[in-house]
Each structure stands twice: as C-alpha cells, then as structure tokens.
Image 1 (cartoon, rainbow, N blue to C red):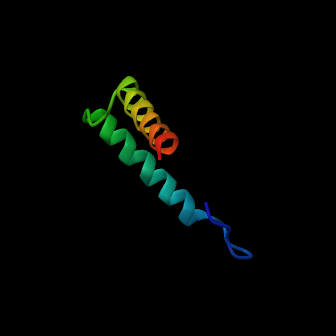
Image 2: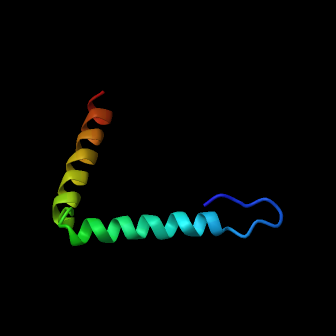
Image 3: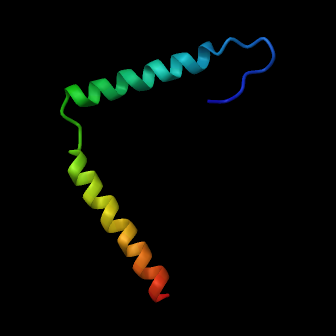
Length: 57
C-alpha cells in the first residue's frame, strides 16, 4: 500500500483491497484456480533452470 498524504483516511486503498478480494473469491467459486502442487512444480522448474543458466553461463 502507499502512504497517504497528511489527513488521508486510506478508504481508497481499502476499497481496492475489498475489490481484489471479491475478484479472487469469484475466481475461486468459478473454478478459475490452479492447484498449489502445479504452481510449486512450475516455480521449482523455473528456478532450477535459472540456476543452471547462471552456473553454466
């Protein structure tokens, strides 16, 4: 979050956070999700490739 100017109440930030949560819940309810194991496997492959590139490069 950003720092509000003197006297700012942060309600804009709160509205954005609430909207983001609502979008995330709607995605989950609609089945637009990726299993954690799939995400972790993809990240592991990505960082292993980066390491190989760094070591080999």
